Image 1 (cartoon, rainbow, N blue to C red):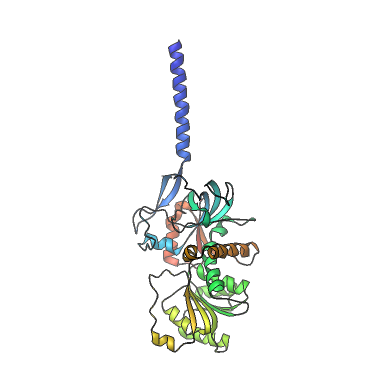
Image 2 (image 1 turned 30 degrees about the vertical axis):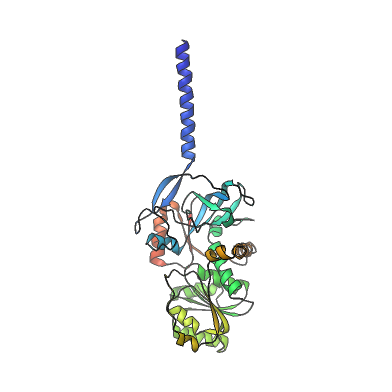
Length: 354
């Protein structure tokens, strides 16, 4: 009898521990969209949790934007040299699950974050450096939060920090996905500038005027030069925010005023179009600046933080609003990628994950 009782207790103990181990094992796994091979669909897989390093935050992801660079990564454009397999996505919002050695972020905080150096956002969980995490105040929707820091933070750097935009100046914005909308919103609705919005399709022009553009037109050098001459009385534009590159940049240079500022941002091109010295000699004196949040994070961290802080504050005050073109669940990430490929929408595509 004693032996049977021992066997029963031992079996119960093993079964209890096995259940606990199974629970722990499943609790430490999470779903993610994994890129295993270039030019192939992402695969939804269960991945094991990684331990946090000091200064890191584990986020339960509620939403993650799909940016053009995420799509290009799947097609082989990989300037970050990320090794495969990789989970794309870097612009996330959610709730903090765990921290390690952090001072400003705590478990339970609602946050938005940029994980450009490690990606990992197309997942139920994402590990991000505390330095790249901002606490969300008020009732900011997770989807909206995930669509905000990259494009609006970059617009703050380009238009305000580098372009020295002030109220009631004249601005031209070329409209590529998300970045163009952010610059239009900031220039027209916060700084009350007169904005010419240039897109690649007539279908978008009415929407751009609703968003605050003084004038909206599809790309045509002749029409743009005419509109700029009319708007500025042949003086030229104070600030140009170019997100298209190519021929658009050549046209932009013909529209700038003396000592104006041309800002290059959000490019998905591998290189800038060539500009001949002879072209520059016939134009007014102007500055040409390239801006990126990644560069400012490395070289001027306080400006990087402030750009996103200011964008979040403006959203909280109701001054700006990201445009979300479509949302998809994590399981339909490949449908979202296909939409980017086929339609190239100007607004953000957002994955709803939690």
